[in-house]
Image (cartoon, rainbow, N blue to C red; front, side):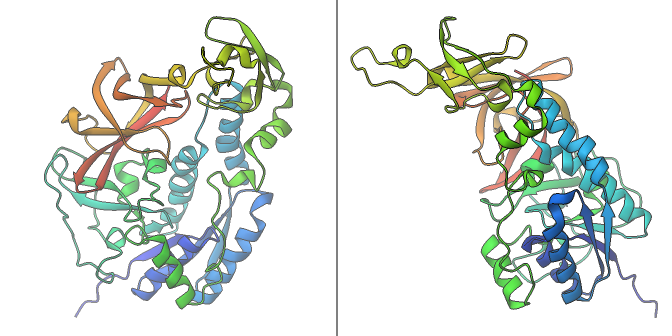
Length: 400
């Protein structure tokens, strides 16, 4: 009798509880597991130590992969240059695309691993696009009932080209508050065929419980902030320390062009922000009251170093452009009326009234105005495939 192959999985151990539990789940299901930890810079020392403790507890080999220079150039560099240009970037999207599921995935595949697993809260399933939800599984679910379906092993062999019938789908996590699918929209079919998200079907509370039950060192480790390289610093202080020459005080004007105050440097502001600048309250007082209304950033002119502020209504938008489009599946949207979009990871799903294609860009029209639509942010498109379960279709970068 020929024994079936034991799949080899490399787990990206970040040092946090999510990746630790992901590794433990895979070990308990009998996979051949090894740990890898990405060294991204000086700020990650404690995370590296935690990853080492998890690997030791689970009896896993652990390899430290130094991607510090690549990360600094591609992710931190992108972050700084975007803010310098007056944009509001999302470095986690770039890190996932180029570092975790780029350089790291390529490396573990070159070492003979079948899959790379991470602690992301998202799910991958293979099924039919634009059709009633169904799961096409190549092997039986290897996880306990109610969890782990995104880590089940999918069929091997050459990857079929994505089409309208059958392809790998990226879905939101079971824990909607922790869902990270927004940050993963640039993954392609080849990457999704080689990636596992073992905790995607669990809520965070359950993940903590499992970590405590199995005595993992990361069980009580606090939540990490979204932008890891800030390392406890505020975004403003991080920028001030690295692009100080670009952070110059300047004029604040209202929508009529009247000078109403001063700002501390354009890179410190984003569209929709309502703090960090000093203005005359007269401009924003109600007609029947001397009580000032809140002022919001509505525009930034980098060339002139001028910040424009206005009322909340002036800061809201129903329309924006999206470029650098990336599609997970067939490469086009069907049933446009069912489309939803997110403009920030923590934001809600926004309803779309119309999509218009302009060359390689999309013009998005919302059904209702939204506050804080900022150039540089990612716009990620979803469709609801069943009650409160959503599929990521793709996305791009907001330009205006």
